[in-house]
Image 1 (cartoon, rainbow, N blue to C red):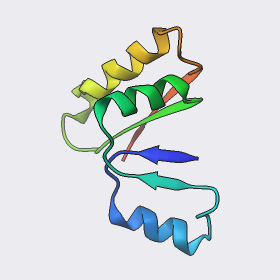
Image 2: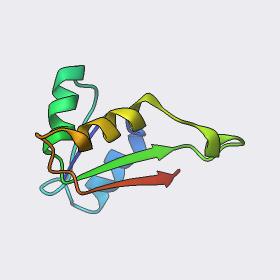
Image 3: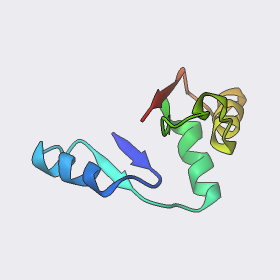
Image 4: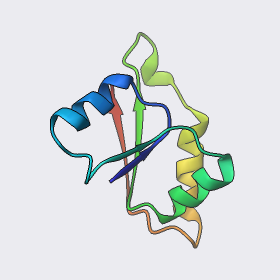
Length: 85
């Protein structure tokens, strides 16, 4: 499982503590074209938005990129999950 993008430092600590380093890869920033390629080959896309007042109205650019990648012929994405933090 690979997570690409900014993640809270505690996430790596959890991966280490649970000894999941061989199953979970955390990758920070990647160039936009590489991110799009990763979206197009992903089985699942995860979008996490902080739960703050008004967050239910947030429409991030990432959401539209996810929707766009699902419509591309290169995509195998079957499901998009959005979870509040």
